[in-house]
Length: 217
Ligand code: SAH
Image (cartoon, rainbow, N blue to C red; front, side, top):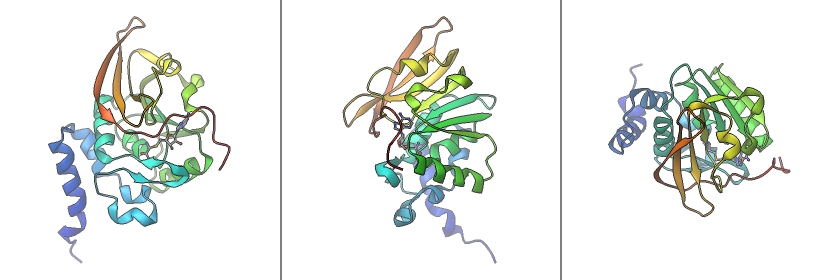
């Protein structure tokens, strides 16, 4: 049976919208295009999987808005040889996009349920370059440091010093920084001598980076 062109229309529209908003990196767009967002979206919201909006997932958390996923992935300037640390696995959507543009993704989540569901999705997609950990991502992953790139997908209240210390000298970290409902998306670029250039990219709304692991499942 011939494929109906309509089937891919929402995805094609989403990609065009991201492009129009400045996500122009071909590798990033391709990674988003080949990541089935409906797989990461709860049943209740599957019809909205290709809308450019954040959606609720379990444990009171959210799957990020595709535009923000594109923007953050592009801002991270990931090379295909890079080892990337991601804090806040959530649904695993951003993790999957990162896995398609890098060599290895290390991802940390503080809710066991979210991590288990995300792991099932990585398996279903046959991803072989994602390594997961249940823990407090604010502390990073010292045993695997240093990383070429670090992405934080929950809002850090202030400069994430522990994570910056796990970055290679010329590495890049992208994170929402701020205590309120609206935070500043910042990019820290290592200067090779232990210092960083800091850029404020745009305003974003993320759930907070919390201390410790979740007691509930
Ligand atoms: N990138 C995700 C969005 C995640 S929302 C996606 O694409 O679906 C932010 C996630 O960060 C939540 O799952 C939350 O539980 C997690 N989080 C918050 N604080 C954390 C911490 N200290 N360590 C690890 N994960 C944390």
